[in-house]
Length: 304
Ligand code: ACO
Image (cartoon, rainbow, N blue to C red; front, side):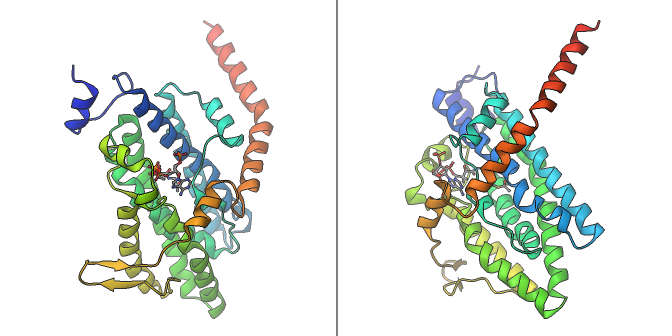
């Protein structure tokens, strides 16, 4: 039987029953739980627009998308369970602030164009970050990422299609799209985490092949990927320093407001309190459903 270090060196997967250092297990639980919480909290900014969608078609698309996010959360909680965690306990840790979720979901959705921009930029950033995680060293997480990424890529395309439609509409619709891009661009860049020099976890997670690229590498990839899409769409990205650097073969871009990222991660973003309050209320109001499901399962088990 191979040791943990041999499995990692051979670029193979660690499975739940394999031996693993306690620090590796803790890192995986931290990342998977944060990721699961992000999917669940991420239902809120767009969920708000389900009853306000401008047509039946848009409503059906958005409803399906928000349901997908719930599914991603469930996969990920199940992946955390393979590491000995309890889903109810993880939910408690989210709602009492002991565990984090992505900063991006603490920004408000002010117009319907935000739904398109979340699909295009936020889900685009998520794909950029998560495609390499399909090769992450922890088997259940890597496998969950494969399906999650397929669905995220559909989400990204629906966002882009929505924005293309709006950009072909009235001047007011085009202005709504530009306003949404202006508000979401910098928070999207922050999704990749702090700069490498200030990222305490990256080096070890790279050595363990949990992360395949650093935060800055993925941020650069996202910028390079997004600039031509913005041109095609006809919107301006709100960064005066953004330009192609032929020498590097990449775009140069400005510095995100890292203090803002720290504040948002620390609980002081525009919507942090509201997001957690909603999650807590949904959890409390769902108590009777959990009790009924558990009673039903007990009854079924007792019946031969
Ligand atoms: N929002 C909230 N917290 C963040 C963010 C962010 N955008 N970026 C970094 N952090 C946190 C980290 O979780 C870490 O906190 P902790 O040590 O208390 O857990 C701290 O800031 C320092 O960051 P890093 O050392 O860079 O942490 P890490 O190596 O875990 O990298 C990253 C952060 C890139 C987010 C990584 O955890 C990851 O790839 N996670 C999986 C993807 C994910 O969770 N996506 C969720 C949003 S996408 C979506 O749901 C649509």
